[in-house]
Image (tube, rainbow, N blue to C red; front, side, top):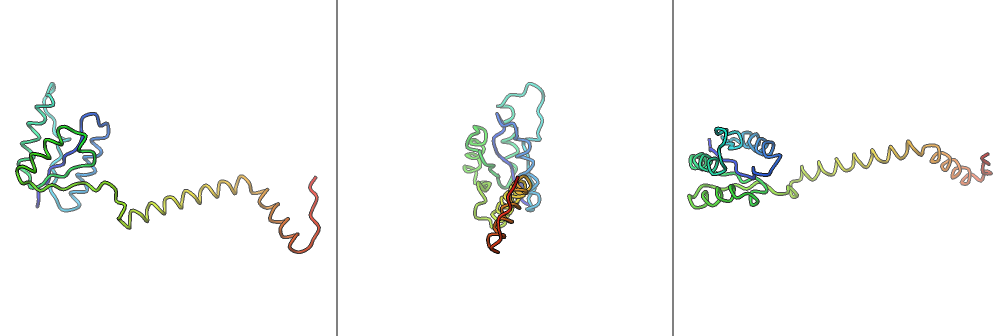
Length: 151
């Protein structure tokens, strides 16, 4: 089983744990053994440099590195990327936009369609009386009947 290190922006990223956990579970499903540096805990007072030293040791023991979206915004992730490239460690990039993925496009289409139908139903419910009145008027006009006068 290929051991893969997850790299991405942690500093100033409020959702970094969720991002790393999502990548970890996806990599497990894909058959990798993920190494998640976001789970590593160093003693209180550890500096950024202490975390980087620790994370680089983890990276050196891996067969590949998985670069999360936004990794270019992180100084640490850029260092890890350069080190992996220099050491010949395989680099795998997260898909930025699954725009060419048919399942993703279909899911987006269905979601948008569902929202549109929901809005249409809300509109119809709010304007039911007016819609029915107009439909009756069209029917009476089509049949040649006199319009009903409303009071």
